[in-house]
Length: 221
Image (cartoon, rainbow, N blue to C red):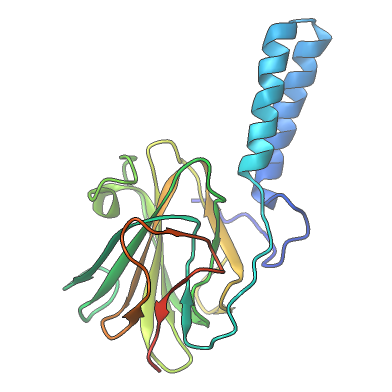
């Protein structure tokens, strides 16, 4: 897991953790052109553009509703269900899983304001993030968050089959604000969120959502 220092507010149209990938890829491409391996150089140039596009970090309009639970990730809802005992929330809760493919924006955002009570990192495997067992077996980084009204929810970044780098810039004790950037997972992944059972859910399985702007539901205060 990567603790790359990364501002909550974008200072570039590209996420800062992607700069090193872009620089390395660009240097490699220039080298190929220099030694006149033209075909491979053009292929590498295409890869450069894809890497730049993958690490794009667009601004989002955060909903102006203090009870709104916004999506922490771009992607598709693959799970939305009530569950019992789990590793993050003591009481029964609702679990929502968002699958991010390589074409989605991969910057993750805070779904609801509060304070981080605990961070938990689990080393693990790299199954396809769309599989149910990914929540249990894959490498992941979890945040346990307490809202200003005292409710708790959990946010879990999960590495996927290709994703091998989880990035989180926040730590225990940090005050966080709804919609702000807090991390990303490189090259395809999944994000699970565990919210109180009385949360009013506003999305359904198969629905596509965008981080920071799509509303997953409403927390009762």
